[in-house]
Structures are given as structure tokens and as C-alpha cells.
Length: 226
Image (cartoon, rainbow, N blue to C red; front, side):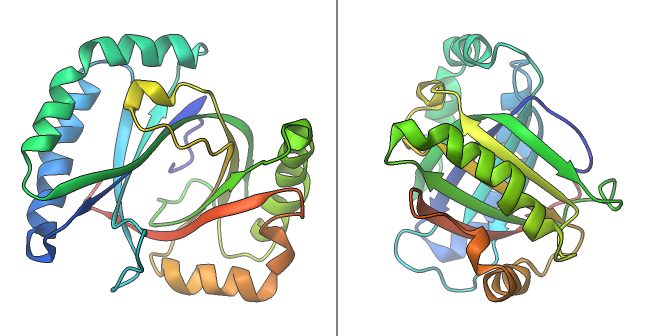
């Protein structure tokens, strides 16, 4: 994010079941939870994003927390994280009517920048993709890196695009998703939903080939000063 180049990312979504408590939950997440997570020395530069939709469809998530990892051995780092993070789960559960949704650890396979890459990332398009045919996983990774991400960046809507592949270390954050790839697109503007709609209109083939399965497409807007 913001032009940095981490080796991996943690992608964590959550929901607050009582809409009136969303603001308080987001404030706690950023001012308390983020501080406690970073203290463990594994995950860095936490950022909070909110789903750009005013009304969510069933199964969609409101909150997205993104973290960066800079250790080469991501699996080892997350094993270390899991040993010291039990209290974080307990603190999360103490928040009223909250639900953690999906959590995953990904290694950055490919990162592409435009000339605007140093701008702050205010909007985020996240595309989570499964590969039902394991033998085609490398083909899918290559397609994302050489076709999808360059095509989307070529629209001039986003300044950074990354291809991220699951490390198999999701167990360190619980609830493994089983999703193989995560494509992330960062924009300087916060109108994330409109940008995502523009991508769907102008580059529909950039979403997935026939041997892939798009599980989730989310448009998120950054919260806080971060």
C-alpha cells in the first residue's frame, strides 16, 4: 500500500451485526486492535477499509483489515505470530455482536506500479480467486500477472496492482479460506464502487479465465488517517 513493497499481506474481513455499533467497532479496531497486533512484531502497517456498498448483500463483509509482512519465510513468521496472538482473538470476541469472516495470508507474486504509485491508496478493489484445477495454478498465476493486472492498470483507474498467492499459513489467523489467489488494485480516489463498476464494464475479461473461479469481488474505501 502507498507505494510500499511488502513480501506478503494479511487479508482479514469482519462484520458488526448491529449497524448502530459499526462506527464504534471500527474505532476500536483501528485504535486498539491494530496497536496490539503490531506489537507482536510480525504484521506491519495495518490499514482499515470499509466496503463501499451502503447495503451489503448476504455474505458480503463490511470491514477489511490489511497488514503487510516483510519476512522472507512467511509461514515461519505466522507460526511465531500464532504463538503470541491468543489474546487478540479473545479481545475480538469481547466486542459485542462481531463476526470474523475470512482470513488469509498471501505472498506477493507480482507487483505492478504506474507513475502514480506513490500516491496514498484510498480505494481498493479485491478479487479473490480459487483454482479448482491444481495443475492450472501456475497458469492462473501467470495469467493474472501478464494479462489481468496489466489490463486493469491500463484503464488508468488504479496506480498499483498485485498478484498474491496463498501461503497455506491461514491457520495462523484461523478460518482458512482455501482461496488460492488474491488480486489487489489500489486507487488514489476513494470512489471504489464506481471504479469497480468501470472495470467490469471496460475489462470484463480481466476477471477470470475458464479454469478459474472468482469467489469474491469487493470494492473498499480506506478509513482513518493511516
